[in-house]
Image (cartoon, rainbow, N blue to C red; front, side):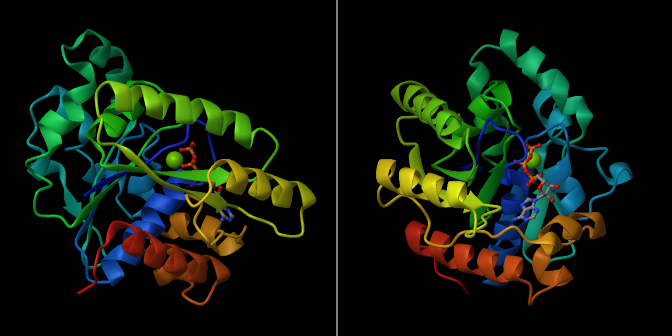
Length: 256
Ligand SMILES: Nc1ncnc2c1ncn2[C@@H]1O[C@H](COP(=O)(O)OP(=O)(O)OP(=O)(O)O)[C@@H](O)[C@H]1O
Ligand SMILES: [Mg+2]
């Protein structure tokens, strides 16, 4: 089961969702791999992987024949592993352009190594470039973190177009699992308006839980731990726990 977290808009909560949904699923007894597909390496950092622990990384796997199994690292959270990234991965956007079957690199290089995991989360970068395209071409499902603000719907429309293009081409089996509203502030009228519009356009594919704006969620990455290990009682932890349940239901996953 491969789930891509994608939105070409930057800073909307893709990585925060990858880290904390990943941790939430691991806490339910599932074995989870987060593939850090962003040269920023934020998911790796948020999961406590230092720069010197990333000698084997996604770039090496894709470009230098490093076996994926050699790059996967267990995090401090039982059941949660990460395939880390660093800025080397930025070169992939360029190098993949010339590669034959360029959008299938993730699938070809990673499929075997991930067979033992119950679920793989791909943290995509903020662009609809080749790294995201690789993620979408490999994934079974896509989950879209969406910040409820003015330009969100335009961004969502172009993302949905891309998903359609991928479905008609590289990956007919891809499904939109759902949209999750992030950094949500229910006192904000515009946020409520965006929520209504998204619900209207994507009936039934918007997760019930909204992730609130919560400072504990923004602090946790600097400690290299998911929210559950940083402040388990925070509203952010409660929201990601609820999202974990909804995602498991939507995917038909049972905890151990
Ligand atoms: N619910 C939240 N409450 C408060 N801060 C948040 C929340 N979600 C994310 N943040 C913060 O907002 C910033 C952007 O979040 P995040 O890195 O998850 O977004 P992203 O979509 O992965 O960004 P990028 O597109 O750069 O990869 C980070 O500093 C993060 O800590
Ligand atoms: Mg990110």
